[in-house]
Structure formats: C-alpha cells, structure tokens
Image 1 (cartoon, helix red, strand yellow):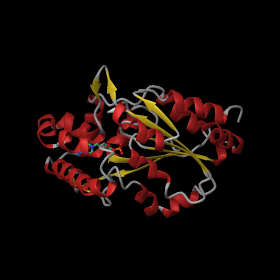
Image 2 (cartoon, rainbow, N blue to C red):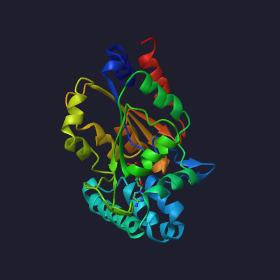
Image 3 (spheres, rainbow, N blue to C red):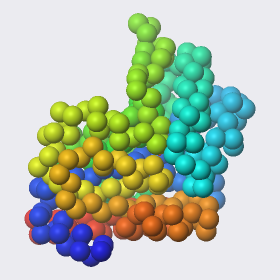
Length: 270
Ligand SMILES: Nc1ccn([C@@H]2O[C@H](COP(=O)(O)O)[C@@H](O)[C@H]2O)c(=O)n1
C-alpha cells in the first residue's frame, strides 16, 4: 500500500503535493539524551515559570489521559479542553511580555528533529506548501522555526495564538481553542486557504498522536494520503493502534530521515 501511494505521488509530481504536519513531538524531538524535550506550552512555562510548570501544568495528570487509546475521543475531549484552558489561563495570569518569548525560546532546549533543515529546505525549493497544525502555542512555534532559520514563505501555521494588550502583555488566547482532538476544525475555519490548495490532492501527513490523523479531513478531493506516525512513548502498549491507523510508524526515531527519503524520491529530477 505504501509503495503504491508513494508511486502515485511521485508520478503526479511535487506540484500536486502538500505536506500537513503536527509540530510538538513530530517536527520537534520527543527526547534528547534520555530527557523529555519541552512542548510549546511547556517551553514558556518551563523557562519563565519553572515552578508553576511543575506544580500547575498538570502534565502528569492530563498527558496520560491524552495518550490513552482505550478512552474514546468523546471522553477525552472535555478533559483536553479543561487542560488547555487551565494552561492558557495560567499563562495569562503571568502577564508575559511579547519580548520575553524570543528569549524563552533561545534559552530553551527546543530541538527540531534531526534532518529538519533538509526537510524544510526541500519543501521550500519545490514550493510545496507545509501546513503545520499545532495544538501548542503558535507564537512559540513560530519563534522556534524562525530561530532555526526555516520559517520559509511556504510554511503556514494553524495553532493557538496569544493576544496582547496595548502594553505588549499577554491578555488572552485567540479563539478557537485547538487541542489534540479538534485540529480538523482549523481546516474547516479556513475554507479560502484550503480552497487554494485544491489543486494539490496528494498529501504527506506527519503526526504523533491518533488525533493528528484527522488533520487532512478539511481537504476536499484528496487523492493519495501517506500518513507517517511518530510513536514516541508507551511504544509496546500503543503499537497496534498506530499500525492500524498510520501507513508508516516510526518508533522512537528522533529524526526526519524517513520523510526526507520519501520526499527526495518523490521530487527526484523535478
Ligand atoms: N497545558 C498543556 C497542554 C498540552 N501540552 C502538550 O502539547 C502538545 C501540543 O500539541 P501538538 O499538536 O503540537 O502536538 C500536546 O500533545 C500536549 O501533550 C502541554 O505540554 N501542556
């Protein structure tokens, strides 16, 4: 099945392809030297507010629920909304200044996956749109890719964005709230954007959760979708659900080697 999809995408050429990707723990590393890397939510909380992060972000409570594949999306959704809302309120309470964000990213150990430069540069070279759907914090995400020199013009981000008051202090998060299980709604809220991509019916989708599988649902007329899933955590327990849902499953792989090899093959000689 994978060979057939790759063959079809290659035959149609890069002009018919778009890449849709999750960000935290898909384009960024899950772990480095045995330690978990921060998500965009935790990057600011971790760097500016380390105490509050550990005490209040409640990752130990909510994260196991997020990745528990025995619970339904319907059961998990209200708990995810609760987690995200608490985190956003917590950030708003801290009166974070716009200028603190760049500093927080510089000082954090935010790491894109190995091979990121080749990935972003190849997509830019072939003018292949890269749509990043993230339930993290868009402002931080953009800072991370800018800091790494890969925020190219073909990159579009759909995420949770901060709102600042006239003093440049965070005062709210823009609606709608995006969490792990409602990403496809971003696509539905941006019909113009996705309308422009109708002539690119082939999709390479990268994700790390089962919720990421719906990211391409807003694309009408999709013809060939190759879904690559990063299985970062609780590998044994979650393998069968991932293998049933993704076309390729990468276990504890901190690189973009496989997507890069596929993209190189698809665009070879074009
Ligand atoms: N308060 C929170 C809420 C969520 N997270 C994690 O951030 C990840 C962001 O999502 P992506 O769509 O970019 O993968 C999500 O999977 C949560 O685990 C957090 O750290 N703190």
